[in-house]
Length: 208
Image (cartoon, rainbow, N blue to C red):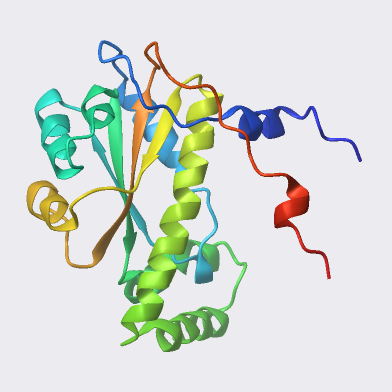
């Protein structure tokens, strides 16, 4: 099966992380909603959907976010920077999250209860597991968001350098919100590097 020229695969191979954004480019709120919609199409354990997105768009708020990101200019210059959080407490709301699946007739009352019970057993009073799952889910959603942006003709930069306490204080994060990543989105300015080469598959793949 030759999928080497499939458009979805092209998006993956063409996406690159941008360091310099055009500060004059603005982005419509409907685009933010679309990007978030596709981000939430990502998978999550137990269908927890344990993520939260804060789109920082105003100039004043972007400047505060840039300061929390140790002065990274791209945070302020991008049209919007998302704070992508993984939720530590999503298992507590899983019954409500799964309710539409039950109401549509896909699972019985007992299956719903068992599903919720299994998730509670997996995560309740287990902070390390909650954290691991929050990071996994937020990372998967972040990749979806970046690929969606690429499909819409936008560019992105995932950012891992930020002061967690500053984010919490400035942007009203709850203790249950774990900031995992910032994703700057916009249009590129001049002076960006070309896409960096990846290591050969033979160096990273082991088939057993």
